Image (tube, rainbow, N blue to C red; front, side, top):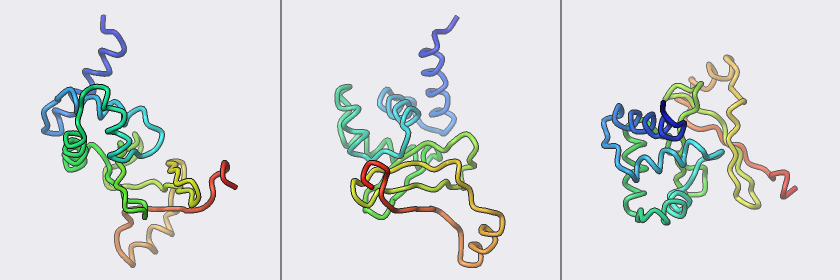
Length: 144
């Protein structure tokens, strides 16, 4: 019988391999970290978390970008010139997006996966092009 953590590790390894990448310890740790995250993480945040495992910043940078290119992660820039990475949610196709809320005071980022564009909004937005990011800015509850 598999231990739940062992089963999770096997699932993560399989997911990485199915994307055409080698399932290295650093990639496995990165994907597990992003699975547990409640908001998109920057390269610096991922590096800080994995530093204790001996994973250097260059490896983290390469792995994040490789996994984004392979379709495992979404790479998002939220107007502050910092790339952040997150897993696609279970209900999202790889091309779909969910909104993010960025606090203009503290810079915190929150996923708003429960908010969807209406069918009418999607049709109207297609007149301009493909929606790749929905971003709301304001003051979070801690700062207001």
